[in-house]
Image (cartoon, rainbow, N blue to C red; front, top):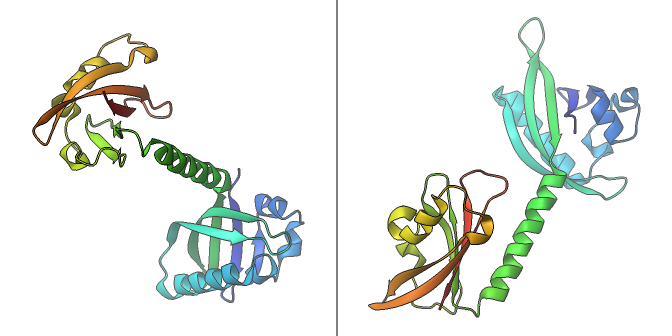
Length: 221
């Protein structure tokens, strides 16, 4: 979606907006002139915007990519934006207003929230099984370890941030092979827990969004 751009004076009154901003509110650009955030958003959001813009004018320093949640006053719709604010000056180098650039991140935020919800559901389902999960990063290290309650003696810190080729050589050997199909990403590993050798079966998958990143799932046999 195009960035929404708003030009405001020192009292946070709108001077003009770009077409993307006008389309977002189903208004003509000239209808915005003289209005403030109080005309478009709920009181909480409008007050925060006014404070941020006042600080921007006082400091003269741009604010870049600040995440903001907003509620549209007319509809009650909730959304998120990545907002940047830049002071602008007249020919005498005096600050006379602000330029606010908002990038709509609502879809991304909803997708992230849905992913977090799914992660919580998965962990709830797995908690009574002897399993742990992890991510293998591009750096070749193990990250984001999580273990189920059914593995009380296993300490994830023993693997966190370790080189996978050292801590999980069987996993490393498999993902390092050329031409291995995703369905073949299964192997076994022996892990010592409290002096006892335990066998874990690993299942792991490529991250479809990031090359060289894998998600792993290990179950005690």
